Amino acid sequence: MKIAIIGAGVAGLTAAYHLSALEHQVVLYEASGQTGGLASGFRDANWEWALERFYHHWFTSDNAIIDLIRQLGQEDKLFFRRPVTSIWYKGRIYPFDSYVRAMLFPHLSVIDKLRAAPVALYLRLLRDWPRLERYTAHEWLTRWMGRRGYQILWEPLLMGKFGEYYQEVNMAWFWARIHKRSPRLGYFVGGFQALLDILTEQVRKQGAEIRLHTPVERIETEALSIAPGEVASRLLVHAQGQVEAYDRVIVTLSPNLLAQMVPELPEDYLAGLRQLKSLGAVVLILALKQRLTEGHYWINLPKGEGFPFLALVEHTNFIEREHYGGDHLVYCGDYLKPDHEYFRLSHEEMLARFLPTLQRFNPAFTPDWVRASWLFREKYAQPVPGVNHSCNIPDLATPIRGLFWASMSQVYPWDRGTNYAVEMGREVARRALAV
Ligand SMILES: Cc1cc2nc3c(=O)[nH]c(=O)nc-3n(C[C@H](O)[C@H](O)[C@H](O)COP(=O)(O)OP(=O)(O)OC[C@H]3O[C@@H](n4cnc5c(N)ncnc54)[C@H](O)[C@@H]3O)c2cc1C
Image (cartoon, rainbow, N blue to C red):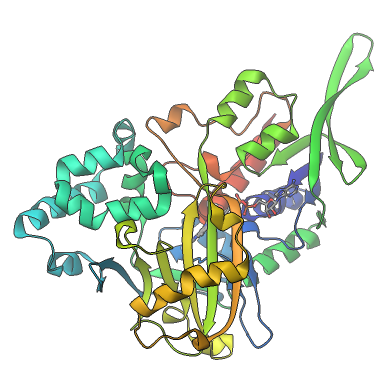
């Protein structure tokens, strides 16, 4: 079969990997100049390893991507370690990545702790998650942990991840986070981009064609009369003034882009796509001449404490700075609606907003610590799973025969991630062949 895949992120690359292994003729269309999508990286002149545009790591439970790494013969490059993840509370940073540390946290009363511990244990052990999706995490956690425990421990995380939508997120999503995540975090020698390059190379070796700088504009169906009284259809992909026909098309983009690209989809399906909510991501990456925090990899920042961003990730407290020419690398990140001013402000304006805050993490910080900085923004970065979300998720097969859609918005109840992009890429390849 001749199969087009739109988007060469992890989902598109994985689908291409499986389909080209079976000798189908695969063409991958990618709008940008590189493969890897949200997980892709860049390398400054003096760096040995690439750095992700958006902070990335794996969990020990990310079996689909760990399997893929094994299939590619690269498991010796995968490693796990246990960096410190922390929360900010009233002007101080507290490591917060184990039950013991949570129990030692001085700002929770004994009663708060006695309520929080069984809730965490219950969520860790529970398997029947669907019954949680009819509650919002906000109401369920407040009820079972108590207002204070929830406000200190989990509300900042939900706010940081979902902004003004945070009270809408369902409890099954929160369960998945507690149930599946590990304190040990994984990374790849050379950065995620090194793995993506190996996968891209393998996909090419298997005969798939990757067209970079080729944004797809439109997909439409064409009816073909194959015999008297018999009509079949094929799919036409429009990109850069060229039109090409395919037996199958797999789109890996946002619901909005799918709706714009395929106006022929039935109106009720388009309405379903339009009501799927998501947020964009903005990160400012700083290469510093000195270490910013005392060994913290990840710090969740509560919105109420006046930070201009909601996660501070000091990557070189996870991965040695020797791989980056001695730079200390810090991400300042936030998830925001695509109409937020951070999507419009210039790089200089973003630096002016973010840099003064860094003194709160280290009073000695001065702007001349910054050797270089990079700003990355993506408008589709974090789907928002509302109450009873499982009823709203479209199937991988769209109503148009031969047209499939595999996106972050269909990852559920797990939080989207490269592991699930691999799982989905594999599954959509299987479904595309099964029609
Ligand atoms: C801030 C942040 C932190 C994250 N942290 C982690 C983490 O720690 N661990 C983890 O595993 N995952 C993490 N993720 C999630 C992970 O990056 C994604 O789940 C995964 O990369 C999604 O892959 P995808 O292929 O579904 O989509 P994408 O990566 O979005 O790929 C879609 C591709 O389509 C291309 N495209 C867009 N429009 C067109 C068009 N018209 N024509 C052709 N191509 C087009 C895009 O350029 C892109 O390459 C993070 C994401 C963000 C934003």
